Image (spheres, rainbow, N blue to C red):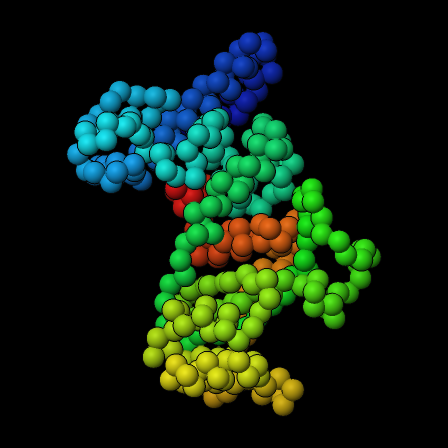
Length: 311
C-alpha cells in the first residue's frame, strides 16, 4: 500500500463504529498469531523427536491452538513445537512479538503490560519465561585476546516477601565499602564479542578458576587487572597473561593488550540496568542473559529474532 492510500485509510478510521474497530483489531491480532505460529513451526524444523522419550517415530495428530500436534508411536504421548520450551503453556500468542519488541526496547514491566494489553503480573511472568533460554545458553570458548574482570552489584531483595534481617540501607548511599551488601559478578569478553558472566554469592579463588577454566584454551592471551588470582590461574593453565596494574599507570601494553573493551561493556551494562531502578539479586542472572542477547545481535535484533532466541 502506498503512502497516499495509507493516509486515506487512517482518515477513514474515525468514521468507524466501535464494533467495526474491534473487528479490525481482531483481524490484526489473527495475523500476528499466524506469523508467530509460522515462526515457531519453521524453527522446530521437519525432523520431530518426542520431548518425552526422544524417539523419532512420531506422526501428525491433528491441531491444537493452531499448532500442529504430534503423537509418539513409542510412548503414545502427544506434543507440539512448544512442548518442553520455556513458552509452553503461555496464552495470548498474538502479543508475543510485541513482548519481544518490549524486551529489545528494555521497557519496564508496567510499560510492557500497557503495550501488550496484559496484566503487569503476566508481563512479569512472561519476561522471565522469555529470558530462560538466553540465560541458560552456555558461554562459548574464548578466542584470541580475552579480557576478564569482576564487577559488583548492590544486593537487592526487591519483590521478596521474606526479607533477611539486616540494617536498613539509606537510599542513594554509597555501599561500595560494605562487601556483604554487594553481589560479585565475573565477566569475560574476547575481541570476537563472546561474553560470559557468572554470578557468585561470595567470590574466591576456586570459584573464579572453576568458571574460567572451561572457557580458556592454550591459544588465549589473558588480559586482566592486577588481581593476583588471575596471575595464579594463568600460570596453572599455561596461558600468556598481560597484567594491567592501574595503580602503576599500566593500562595498555604494546598498544593492543588492555581491558578497555570489557570496561566499555560494563558501562553499557550499568547504564542499561539503571532503567529498572534496581534489579533483584534473585533475577540478576536473567538480566545479564538478557543483555548478552542484545549485545550478540546488536543493531540487527528484531522481534522475530528475539522470539526465536527464547525457544
